[in-house]
Image 1 (cartoon, rainbow, N blue to C red):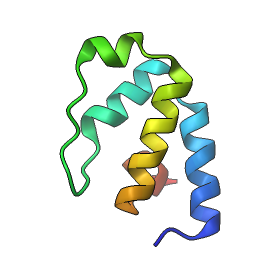
Image 2 (tube, helix red, strand yellow; image 1 turned 30 degrees about the vertical axis):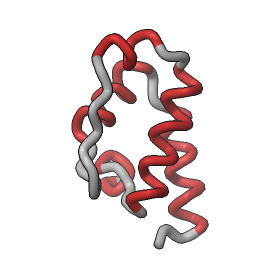
Image 3 (cartoon, helix red, strand yellow; image 1 turned 120 degrees about the vertical axis):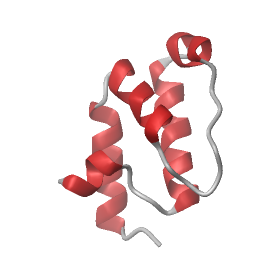
Image 4 (cartoon, helix red, strand yellow; image 1 turned 90 degrees about the horizontal axis):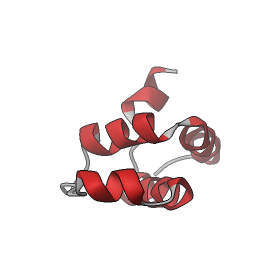
Length: 71
């Protein structure tokens, strides 16, 4: 389970990502289930929506993305 400081770190990380970096996170994230978002969706969905989806994925998997773990 993610600790409160890890959740805060995750929120900061995701909010700092631009669309290209967030798209890379979606494409490279290794969780308990595969992510299958079309490139069109990743390029046209509002950035805030993508951020919320990615945050939910990280919480569901109880796993920080690699960029967050390296910090």
